[in-house]
Length: 309
Image 1 (tube, rainbow, N blue to C red):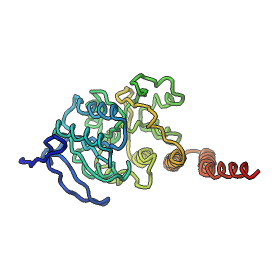
Image 2 (cartoon, one colour):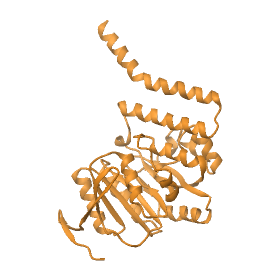
Image 3 (cartoon, rainbow, N blue to C red):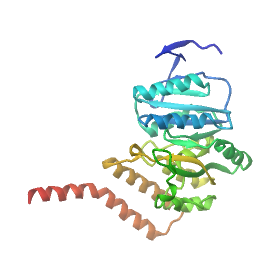
């Protein structure tokens, strides 16, 4: 296939193809090959620390299974991040770089899903790492067990210096020993047992469900797994094939933290409805939901009363 090239900061890059979808106009940088990959890996990049971004991308490109396309969405990232993404797109023909104005993680992932050509879709975050056998082990399962449409893996947590801190995190180890469909459904009524960057999902199932819910700016993965698990089966590989880097910029604070908690509780309630959780547990969840919703206003009221006293 003949491709015209243009200069981008000293690199020779394929011309950008202008495209349009339900979210608006965008551009795709990379060869639109006629080859159909078995897997489409989707990543959205915005403002992750650069040392994590490079390692994350390389952990995908170093997979022992190689028949995949790597769709990276540049979601209005800064200059340095854009240069890193451009460099990797130049190095590896499997990368399709999407260039767009910032519109947030949920819509960016949905755009990536719409572009995906693979039979399966895998998620990667800009601050997570894959072990080299991750895709291969997941494909061995979904290709041999057709009833399984969603596969995650165990996940270890690293600090900003790449030291393993998993065992020091309270609550994280509660997610272990969750492997099969019924265990996952039960867990979903309490928390999200999947590490987002660990999953591989059947693309047809994902697209029939319209992918991520646009109204969930946070906990979009939790809500999606609940909908998938309502009618389909899944499993989690009991091997830490994914590593998540925990750093200061991965922590959500302030009003965003409250919204994240509210949307997480909303997804959890949906799981309770689907998977027949006890009524008493639903009541407890609603109380927690309204407490989180009211707390910011309560704090402001107390502060104002203190000032006026």
